[in-house]
Amino acid sequence: MTIPESTTCVIAGGGPAGVMLGVLLSRAGIDVTVLEKHADFLRDFRGDTVHVSTQRVLDDMGLAARFAQLPRQDLDNLGGTGNRRWLGRGRSERRTAIVPQWEFLDLLATAGAAEPTFRLVHNVEVVRPLQHDGRVVGVQYRGPDGAFRQLRADLTVACDGRSSTLRSAMSVVPRSFDVPMDIWWFRLPRHPDDPAELSGVAHIDRRCVTTNRGDYYQIGLQIPKGQDAALRARGIDALQRDIATLIPCMADRVGELTSFEEVKLLDVQMNRLRRWYGKGILFIGDAAHAMSPAGGIGINLAIADAVAAARILAPPLRTGKLSTRHLARIQLRRTLPTVIVQTVQGMLHARIVANRNSDPRSDRRRSRLTEMLGRNPLVQAVFGLIITVGPFSERAPEFARR
Image (tube, rainbow, N blue to C red):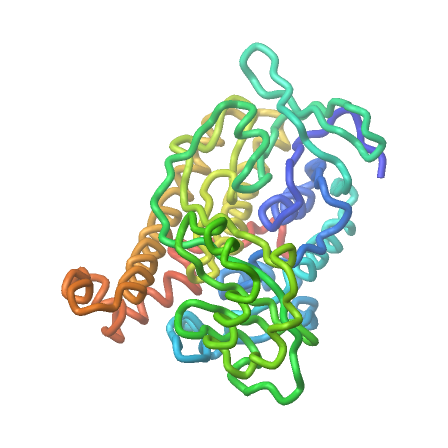
């Protein structure tokens, strides 16, 4: 697809926030160009937990029927010995669904392709913002042929993730919060006679999650923060033994994991920007606030950012009267939900540390709030609603409904 020399809104990054924002703005008749550096959406280890809040937005957009046809696993609860039913269902008939992110993004991209002002271009890497008189006026990018070009825009939106190129280029540094773990991601084969509790998503001993991908499991194993190199030095045999101990039914296939080249590290981060915008530029999704994988909320919070942004941005972009005040309104609207969810995730992290240090002395040091999270059904229900439905959840604006 040909990239024009100018557009009304350029979006860096074709993840959930970027594609959703592009689709919503295009339904308002705004010229949008989404630049995605990869050739497609097919990447294994990405967030794929689609909560009730996001499903409601898809309903509003007329995409519910198509979403229902995607490969998915609806969750009543999370099985295994680390069962936490409150993560599965909010106060709604809908259920949290596990959907491969590439399928979800293809759904949105297809919806966008139906709009004449929507443009999604793959194999294009945004390398820096264009600036003029202290204002961002577009981006410089490297195209599929390796050549550098410019795309000017009234608004630039950074949806390029927790390692945002645009954020780094503008020397914007988020405030970071401590997290107790990183995640190792890898695959193991799935057998037809595997236990029923592994048929969807199962948490094993609170350290390991297995996601059914049809003929294989995507497995996420918690490791202590910053211990990747030391644990790899033990050798692949040690990891094979750990898996066989945690998931005995997989002991017969751990030999399929032959090298640490097959084990990907997710450097878990939790942070947020103090200011999500500048003159001509807006940061949303992970570029504004990286989330822990605890609760599978990241993709849903990013979608909510995009919906709120579209609602606020569409009128001034249509009239050519966009100001920094509009960008500030987006941060004002989305900061409190972000803070609430990150606070909940911090409590889940405290639970992880408490379970890791399960000697009597550490048990006595657990906070009263952490104990409530673990034992009080009412608190569990409230936390479940925060995770699955979301605080101050967003609904698609009228111009985007079908």
